Image (cartoon, rainbow, N blue to C red; front, side, top):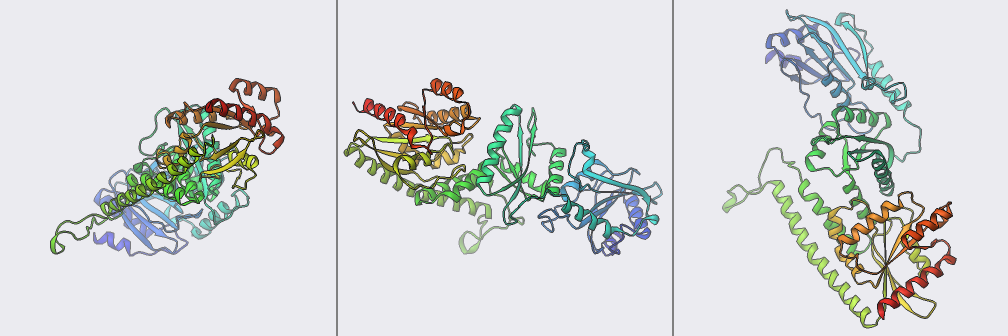
Amino acid sequence: MKELERLGRRRLEPDQIATPELARSLASISREIGRQVGLMIDRAGQVELVLVGDHRSIMIPALGQSRAAGGRLRGLRCLHTHLAAEGLTQDDFMDLLFLRLDLMSALEVDREGRPGKLHSAHLNPRPPGSDQDAAGQAWLLLPPTQVSRLSDNLRELIASLEGEFTRLRPTREVDLGRDRAILVSVSSASLRQARESMDELAELAASAGVVVLDTVIQRRDKINPRLILGRGKLGEIMLQALQLNANLLIFDQELNPSQVRSITDHTEMRVIDRTQLILDIFARRALSREGRLQVEMAQLKYMMPRLGTRDDALSRLTGGIGGRGPGETRLEVDRRRIRDRLAKLTAKLKEVAHERHRRRERRRKKEVPVLSLVGYTNAGKSTLLNALTGSNILAEDKLFATLDPTSRRLRFPEEMEVIITDTVGFINNLPAELLQAFKATLEELGEADLLIHVVDAGNPRMAEHIRVVEKLLRELDLSGLPRLTVFNKIDLVADREWLRDQAADYDAVLVSAMDPSTFPPLLERARKAILKVWQ
């Protein structure tokens, strides 16, 4: 123990990887105790940690967030012994990758406890290319050499590495105040389906103001229950993050709490999944009191099972008479507060539902028909509502640009007046928490005399979007309502013959929200459908 403590007080020159004296001490102690011994050394040459492993390996503990953000190397290097006189192992390379170490070095130790050659490796700053198809290209090996023959140029080597990482990053306009993400999909579905889902995830990220730097798709027959993807693939993604200066990983699949913790522990990057991304978009876009209540409820339900035990000491708040008793853990307190808040939100949303019910009753007394616009997100529902009613509702070419339900009056040419409403758009794999939270809003659809299903005809995944909307309408028990299908954005479709065939297959009306001259067939079909219901 005294020898190990003395190792922790050693200091090297900043330019030195190791000295002969340090190598002899490390080798001697390691052979004597029959375990690998390692040092974590900072750039000033100060030993930060002394590590003791077993005969075959050494475990590097969590290093905290020091210099872990952005695209920089960590500022720490690992120097440790190998008792089997071998070079760097796969575990060494993975630690180098995941921890973004400046250098990973392994010192051979012979049977007499004498130091042999020193093996070192650093990360490869060059991005993957056509000539780099091996996993080993993620790092570069330095020639094995005796410690007494090491050159004193460590600072120059690290500076050139970080300079090369910076120089080789793709040149692009990046707002450094925004998150820079790599999108990851691990799926057992077909490659086409995975790519389509990834394209949608990229649109969601853009809607959330995230800069997408790269996308990674891995097809696996069996999903890794701990890390989702393989450890080697995760190491490649970490190298990409370093090369591209990414600070966020977004997974297309929903991650359970243990998977988020495992990936975060390995990468020390922020990790979110598709559900959390959608919740973040909803939180940004909800403007009304009702919308904010619904989004907060969805976020709390999502957060509840993901609360972590951040109280490492397992300390408890005082409880019982006179401050005695076990009290509550921090985790229990957080859960109780979330349950209390959910109860309050539920009560407030019930009030909102009653208000909506009263408004619907007033509309029924006035005998005003109701049309509700439904459809996949970004199908152009809000733009169509604006064009039909002369309104100025927010409409953007983004997913979930509009969340809050909106109602406007619309007068048909034959002097018939109706109420037309716009609701939140649907999306594939819509989080169950959101569907439940927006139930009060979606109840509005149940009171409609006619559902107008707006479809983006210019989207190559149009058929899939139609299936998703129909599936969600069935889940909401709305599939029995009269429905009129409208193909919007026909101005973006070049193949008119294909468009007419599709419209015939779905019995759809063709419109462009940007061209009012296309509206008369829609208004006529809607008028006839309403008259049929009201007769």
